Image 1 (cartoon, rainbow, N blue to C red):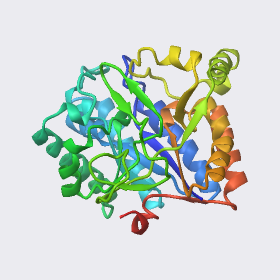
Image 2 (image 1 turned 45 degrees about the vertical axis):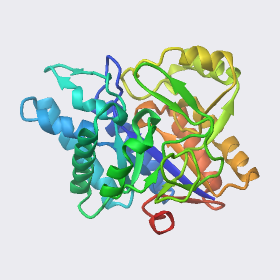
Image 3 (image 1 turned 90 degrees about the vertical axis):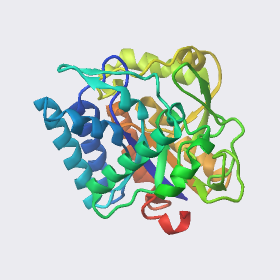
Image 4 (image 1 turned 45 degrees about the horizontal axis):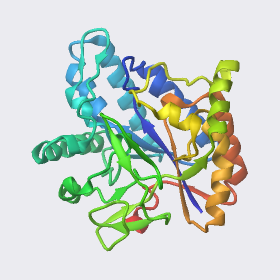
Amino acid sequence: MNIYLTLDYELYFGERTGSVENCIINPTKLLKEIADKHNIKLVQFVDVGFILRLEKFKNQFPQLESDYIAITTQIKTLYREGHDIQLHIHPHWEDCHYNGQKWEMNVSRYKLADFNKEQISDILHRYKRKLEELTSTNAPFTFRAGGWCIQPFEIVKEEFLKHGVMVDSSVFQKGHYQSEQYNYDFRNACMKSKWKFNLDPCKEEEGPFTEIPIGTIFNSPLFYWRLFLLGRINPYMHKPLGDGIPVSAPGQRFKLLTRWTHNTISIDGYNAALLERGLRQYQQLKKEELVVIGHPKSITRYGITALEKFISQNKEKHQFTTFREQRSQLI
């Protein structure tokens, strides 16, 4: 099986975004050390909108200049050493500003679909161009939507074609959520581990695009009760390394604690305890691809330990790979 370890390289988007050092740079270093130790490569889905915002304000604020240098240096190093750098778009950065002390977050336009066609074209052009600048020879071709908000896809289809973004990894099967800021509905998604699509990333049909969905696992409420209790009993091992606050997700915690839910197979926090179970389920279903998601800002010391154990147990039995390595099979 091909296993993709994918990381959404970003800050938090709540009232406190957290620091670049604690949310991005340091945890990414820890994850890279594990990958290097076992001679595997990671996929970084880089939140390019944040980098462009840093670039816009860095001449006014020394802290932002320092953050910009730290992030761009790390991305260049990751790419030079063979890790995969792909496109992650949180377009709400277009409406965010730095007031000299902190980022003033505005998430009223959280999805690409919240922008008009001309704005979408401009965002894709600028964001992809910046990522190409940072990686020099790399032309990113794989996309992950911020907040998984890839729908409705028909709004962005022509721009994706124009800019050579031919692979998506935003869907996780059976997942769905609705709020004022963002929403997604993957309950009717194709159940394969990879498929072609045209207008709807959830629907398999002849088309120019490929969907490689994020791994999905069905969890009981007891798992999340255990997660929240462990965070209070042993915060050293179970507290995220990032120092920010997530964007509000009304009703999500109550949902997790009261009903069975479909969620991503993830290395974030205590979710990493489910990596082996998720892999076994995918093997039983005879799937050929498993995309694991993570966020450097959300990893914990427990999650780092669990990830390394997962890699050690499976690196001889499965292929840890990247979209960059599999490009000829995907496009």
